[in-house]
Length: 124
Image (cartoon, rainbow, N blue to C red; front, side, top):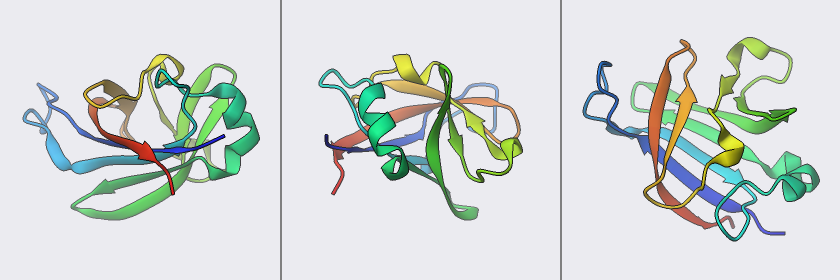
């Protein structure tokens, strides 16, 4: 089982202060992928501790967390003991993580924002 490093950067989000996008805001995710770029659920269950996420932006320090799952719901978890900081990812299990694809993440303020996958490579 191998892990991939996935980088997503904030895409254009009309109607928000990020209407033009922002390459300096995003996520770096480490997760197992199937050959067609979907999250590999079987491999995730065996490598859960290695599945991490880092949120980055120019106006705050990077925040490290983990990729988590409850039932069919995937989310980014930054504090295991506190569900209030969880960032749900819309239909994450159905997204293909290939360069050019888009992923919607609900931020800490409850806003759904769209991110573009800009890099997928073997984690190492």
